[in-house]
Length: 453
Image (cartoon, rainbow, N blue to C red; front, side, top):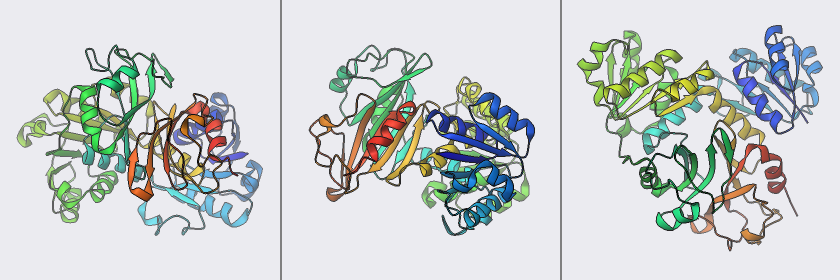
């Protein structure tokens, strides 16, 4: 099936790369001949140069009978109008998805703006990551699966770590708690481990952990005790900061210091969030750090609209003694390796979080959420078992997983319990499964999840 992507910018290219790996047919429609040429030179796709709001150009791109039309241009207005045209003019299109930054367009929810199937707000997605870090204290590739009651994160294995030099079977025996190693990245390659796999220094491992035990397991892996974040600094009075603050409770906001150089912006944030402390000053001013004792923070998130400033501020914060620091990347994903090499604890990319959200909507209706690790190479889904699922009543050991899929956790709603399944676990309707698999195996995962009586 064809997927039409409106906009061949950074988000469009990353999304297309993800879909092409799933053997989807991707067609770009972009007004820039340079971007179209770049897309076809980098990816196995088609690209048509033209306006995304021109119905004839949309027809030429194949939007009339596409599986999905996804608008990720740099213009909210273009994304809205284009998806509105598709929704009203092409009845056979599967779904429309629009990336919209401005909250004034969002309405009350999906499906109530020009008939668009789903709306993704890149800044709201990034803010959710920041709020999640503050509420849990977990930093690197952290994600929370609310329906299943598990968390996921990745960390590099340090020398003399309790994980180093042991097989996964030995680690399971020596470390109590409910956790599963779902993937390992070693020398640039990602693979699904078995019980005999030995963990080495420098390996980056992805784990799924029971919500209640996440801090303890994280601490064992990093030799760092992650406690409550008592002094939180947000750098930049941006829309992402506003979204993040709205996501926090009033008690959490009492621990927040907002740094912003624009006095008018400071006044607006102080009025909207009276619980926080607003500091008017430039984060690039060395004396400002000392005057306000920002170096005493437990956590700093640099979330201005300037990628370079964010990286520098987060790195400088770590040098001065801030316990944890993350940097926002809004416009240039090529900065991510640089940021990670500068002792920054985490990088939040609006491009990556947006693509994750879009891919989630493209998946089965039974998928509650989807998150990725290792730059999209490993995917983890929350999947709700429906009444017509072919494998209801079958034991886990009898499922055709073929070593490609890991069932990392189960939430059984009828007894309000979540657990790590063993081979004797029997699938029931209503169970929520946490499924981990390499992105390259998605076609196999999709076949399994859509197998019906």
